Length: 188
Image (cartoon, rainbow, N blue to C red; front, top):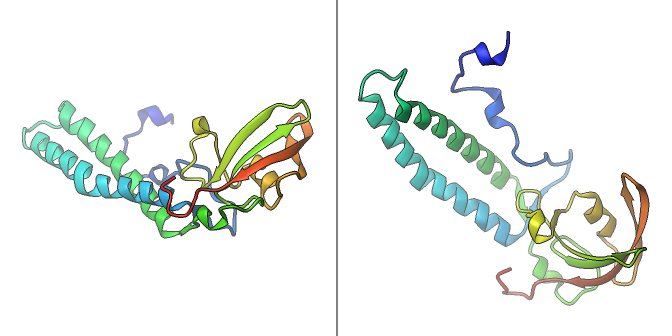
C-alpha cells in the first residue's frame, strides 16, 4: 500500500532520521566552541520558546471542537512533531559532542580541526576552506566537514606540502598555501 493512503502517526522512526550525514563509525562528533554554542542556543530556544507557543496554539485549536478540519490544530500538530524531532536530534548530537577549540593551534602551520586552509590545484586555482564539525558547516561560507574528502586530504599536512585529493574525476594534487587559526579569545 502506498504511504499516501496510510494514516500519519505521531510516533514514527522517520522522526529520528539524521538531518546531517551520520558520523563515521567509531569517530567523535567534533565541534568548535561557536558551533556548540549555536546548536545549544537553538535547542534552548526550541524548548523554552517555540514549543510552548505551538503547544498553546494546538491546545486552543483542540478546544474549538472538530479537529478533522481544523487547520490550526492540524498544522500545529505537524509543527510540534517537527520541533520534537529537531529537539531529539540536537539533544543527541550535543550529548556526544566533543568541543575542540581551534585557537590552541594559533600560529601553527599544520592543518588540524578548525583550520582555515588556502590551497591551489595543478591549474593554479586557489580555494579557501575552514574545517569544522558535521553539524556546523555552511558550504556557502567555505566551510567543510572534517570527514569530507578535502578535509581528510588536508588534515595533518603543513604549509607548502602537496597532498593527493581523490575526486570522482581521479586523483588531484593540491598544494597547501596557507594555514590559519582564530586567535585565542576571538569569537570566530
